[in-house]
Image (cartoon, rainbow, N blue to C red; front, side, top):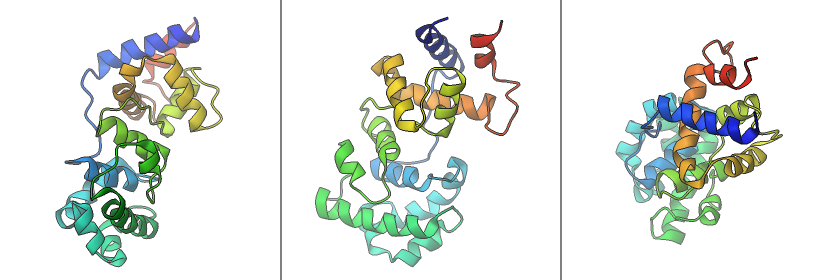
Length: 206
């Protein structure tokens, strides 16, 4: 079976499993999505969704976030990892959105990645899910599963992202990256034994 054939099977099976795939992080607009994704680094989406309502109630816009002191933001997000750094980044990010972008979330990778605490993966999620621009954000689930499915030899997420973009049509990217993440969580968790991982079995059974 060729790599392209394996990629097609993955696409077909995930479409059956997750025909409609909601964005896992709660948000109401591009700014709250940007904040939620930035907060999710080294923290579960579930934890971010637990703490974000209280944060967005008082700081759901760049204007309101920028007015808070760092310690006030930290108090609101203290239950998640790296809260000191994230509080600092959120304040500075909000100030720069006001200063450079009139309080709007920019719609280019370059401008997003110039914001504090916004790496390529975060920018990719915002571009794809807030603005509908084709992107393929690669998290640890995607990186691990694509290696498991022998769809990449990626030593890092950059190479894995490039391989994913070559294997699947551009119009599938925004949905497919979410489908793979949900499949990983449900059927092939990193710490599990993968008994439920039927796609891997389907691809490589003798």
